[in-house]
Length: 123
Image (cartoon, rainbow, N blue to C red):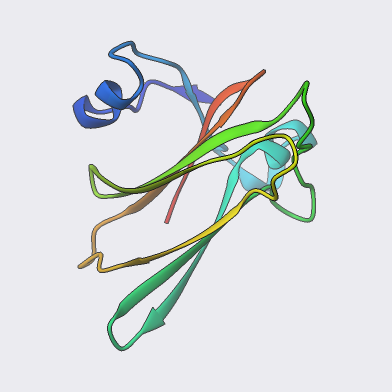
């Protein structure tokens, strides 16, 4: 379930320390715990590029957003370059949209849960 997939640019953003990055290897075998922490990525093709819509949670299982347990931030990477980030508090809905031009590079989203670390999805 976990991997150290932070490259140098992502590593610098995470205060220079390698943190375990969690991701789902097999969506059909994923637990509710994994589903509620994993970023959901929707890419909408447009004439001028793409819009990436991000939320947290898959298959209708959403992450709580309370003082005790919350998503603190999401970061959007196109290839290995961070192109957007948003911070969240306990009363925020964890959703974001970004306009990008990806030129066939992978879209990577990382989200930090204050209790369960960094979770990643790729598209």
